Image (cartoon, rainbow, N blue to C red):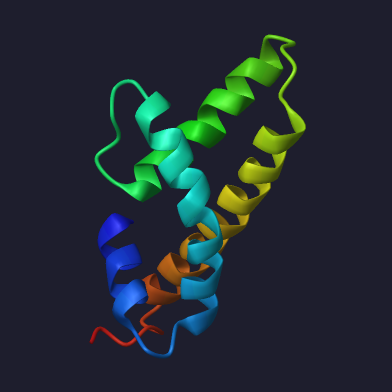
Length: 96
């Protein structure tokens, strides 16, 4: 997924994805130093944040409003990436 993310970030036609990811960047940078172990890339960080929030909710723990807002942005970004992945698997994305 990260290799697709990198390609999308360099593809001039993928402005919508790039714009959505840029919304996540400040949140990623804020969360990055708090993640243990340190994620290898931004996609791993967003997935880990989503997973950790899910586990906290299962345990009945409260999640702050700011964290919920960050999770919404991460979720939308990952959803777009997932859609692009499915498109790529069907041969619909340009491999350039």
